[in-house]
Image 1: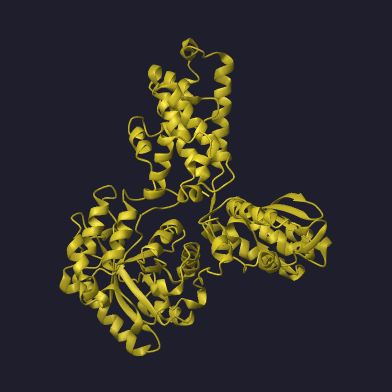
Image 2 (image 1 turned 180 degrees about the horizontal axis):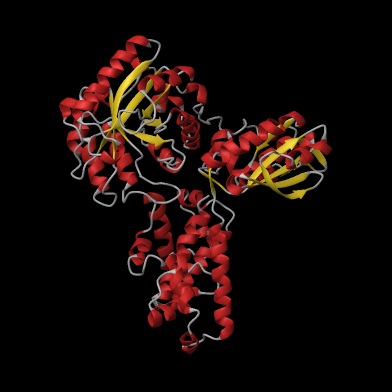
Length: 579
């Protein structure tokens, strides 16, 4: 449900209006609407679709128009407009408990604070006590709120690519004493970042399960060791891992419950209530009688639906589709026939083309795409035209020795500042596929450059389309919705870059691309053959984006692969129209 997301935006609008000293009645209206939307149990998107927003108290025409705009465009122009009128850091500062917009306004007017460090320094100054309403108690409350905010922010979520290998190792270590065992929570749903790390198991040897868990060789500290629960800190990354042991008869219900998401479980509990049932981590009950709980299949069968894949359990319509028997048949690892985005030692990769080919064969791949950097990416060993031709000749030589796999001659070609590609068309024509990527000028007409690049008939794929790095940057200044739209019109595919710190496109944008019938590509961006493992992370994003194998180029044999250039005649009119 989008209730919380919309409520957050309305709250921030109210905060900004209060900071600017706007009409108190207008501010109150936004706060009231936000509170009512947050507490309303029905899905606001469904109310909007049914023209029933008036069912929520406090939703007048102005707020209703904002909500309508949000669901039609994905944003609220009023919010964007007022954000431009305050320093960018103020939205963050106003989240600090006990500070508030009015106090922030006082501190800004007097001391021109704009950052958390500014706030820390000002709270040490004796002059702050001269401001209206600022006594010792008030200042201490703000300090406490600031400390709480910093401590919460320090609880960084863990990258999926970091958490998954560690938890997988622990699960394998625990299997000898467990009848069934699985990660839960956001890790099982394969979200790009993970909060708490929980493992659930059941065993016929309950006494020894926790004992074995706390004796895991990677443990640096034992936090808790009970009869059915254990908690450890592992040496690698200092992660906390919790293990819960449940009775076999409740394992399925507990696995469903602790996998989540919260919104998915709320929807399931609502269905249960409508049927006169109760669902919890212990099972599904009709009165006092337990009617399901041993397996997840038992739990979902009560509601006459198949087991919903964990990656879909985000309350994005999966329950409704399951009830209608219309869940997509999600792409699986066995469907992946190759990797499109691999760098060799002809640019900045660590392995030779032959080593890459051998690794691909060992994985059962039917093809592998060698996509070395183009000449402008000098920092990444970008190939001159002469070196590219040399590499292509090397691929031909190796291909003769390994006929069981197709080696695709590709390139990760820079999209330049004017939207042209980094090699002339006569060179691009010699490649089997081209990934167009932006590696410089992240805030310079990125959307326009991508759209212009799509007009080149030899561009097949846009690489890492938003340019984000999860751990350290938000990405390009790009209108990704517009890029997705043009990709749909021109037949260009978009990459799910599977490198764990990119995972770009994310699942939400994959969903949008799916709705626009845009073909997707998973590329590991491998610079070493060990990085081929990242294909599983890209697959997780694809599954969270509801992708079936027909929409993923990796699932096609090379001869049948629907690359854009093979369907060029179909797209030429749109390329001309939208150029």
